[in-house]
Structure formats: C-alpha cells, structure tokens
Length: 376
Image (tube, rainbow, N blue to C red; front, side, top):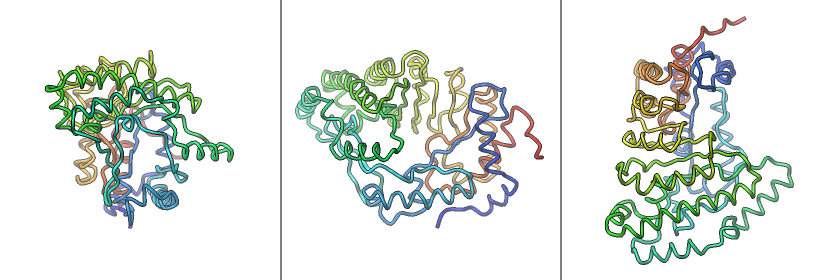
C-alpha cells in the first residue's frame, strides 16, 4: 500500500494542489517579484521501493513492462494527492555507455538494493593497463550499444520524443571512488600520485569527448551541465583542489561555457568545499542536509539554492518541526528570491504524500513575497 499519512492530510484539507502548481510556475526566477518561493520534489528509485513496495528490485531494473506499470501505479497516487506525477511511464530498456564503464566499472545488481558500480581491480599496475585501454578506446564506436541504437531508431520511427543526451553526469569525486574502491583511491593519491594524476587528466579529456559524442548523436545544442557528486565530502580541500577541481573546470568550460547553467547536487557534508564550487562558476546547488542554508548564501551570494530541508526531517519530524525548518531556511537564504524549497538531497524513502502536501502547505503559507490571490 502507498504511504499516506492521514494526520498530515487533515492538516492540508484546504490545499488546492492544482492551484499550487499553477502558481509555482510563476515562481521560478531569482527575484522577489513573484508570489512566493518555488517548491519541487525529487523522488527516486529508493523512494519508490518503499512507497509502493516492488516485489523485486532486480526485476524493476531489468523488466521494462514491470517498471512502467509500477510507475503508473505510483503516478496515480501522487497525482491524486499531490497534483503531480514524477515517473516516466514509457522507460527505456537500453542506454548509452557510462563514463565509469570506460574505466572497467560495471553495475552490480543485488536484490533489495539499487544498482551499485563496482571497480575492476585494486592493483595499481592493472589499473594502469585499464587507463591504457581507456585512452586507446574509440569512443565513437564504443558509446552506443547496438540494442540502444535499435531502440532509438524504433522510437524515432514511432514519432516519440527523444531525449537530449550529454546534459550532465556524476562528478569526479564519485567517479574516482567508484572506479577505484574509496579507501584504495585515497591510498593511491599518496602512494601512486602519478597514476592518479593520469586518471584525472584522462577523465577530464574523455568526459568532454564522450559527452560531445552524446550531444551530436541526439542533436543537443543546449549548453549547460549538471553534476551529481555525493562523494565530494570524502575529499578535503587540498585533495579536492588536486583531483576534482581540474576535472570540473575543464568539463564545465567545455560543456557549460559562459553563463550556461552549472548545477551541483551532493547529498554529502561538503560545506568545506563551497569556495571551490563558487570559483568553478557553479550557481545552482543542492547540497547535503548538514550544509547550512545561511552558509551557502554567504559563500554563494548569487546562487540558486535548491534545498535545504533535511529529507529525514520531512519523513520523521512533527508538523511544527518541518514548518520551523522551512521558515528558517527561507529566512536565511530565500528572502531575496533565490531559493527553491526542496529536500537537501532526494526525497527520503518512507516519505508519504501527506507529508509532501504539508511541505506544499507550509511553502504556500510561510514563504511568500506577496499576498495569495483570493479565490473567485
């Protein structure tokens, strides 16, 4: 059964979800000349597995019909209670390669969990050979599996909307600690610095080349880049500056030049890296729940802040605790109009539609720049 918190439904009996989202469309710019702060939700696969329990997580990832049906069921519930759907009901069976695959990293599927990228080796000599192989790989022929190309052609012939590829990826901190076991990666930064320097150089080069191929293939001419980099907090400022900053600098300059959007998401406690993030020109951010909204605004005065409600507070907290935190974050970082109220990270698994409605109600009531329009 889907998670529907009845006590929160009672608190939100007066909420008109459709009117909320219509007004939300007017609230997307960095200005106070709008009705209120905007709001968004980001439920993902972790969330869906608890909201509408899947009989098999492996089947969810490997069976398109099963996945699409589960998405339809969840969309029906969220549409009814929240006024919005969040999941694609015609998902893809196949996809292009990922940059991690170039370095010998493949997904492991285990029942009861989401896919996990696993490294190929912990031997530095073997990893050097992996880098040799990656450097020699012809990305034009490597990037698109035949099954993906057939599916693309079938969808194109059927007149379906095709996605724009090459819009973003996981960031270097998470890529490095996926293709190499995290502890091993940090040992190698001290024991094999030349090997790790070669990795970061090659990673930047291949990320740019790979994503330009994706963009050409999908006729994507839009500049901009999003980064998901949950493992950023593992790096202190010195190591981040050495192994992550140069990769991001090159990738962003190539794929998000000038004033194009530069977005960073990280669930982690990376407040110690905000100065470097700002120096990279990142101006659209969603950081972990321990990164204070006031600190983000101090370090990044012109950034569009997406957050900073702790996901577990929304899932477990009282109505008043949730309200107080939303109001506090709005006061600290949203009063000039540069904030989208959302969770600091994805919507936590176990969060139901009643609490989602309460979040909407609080934003509607407490995060305004103008008086709500009176109903006719």
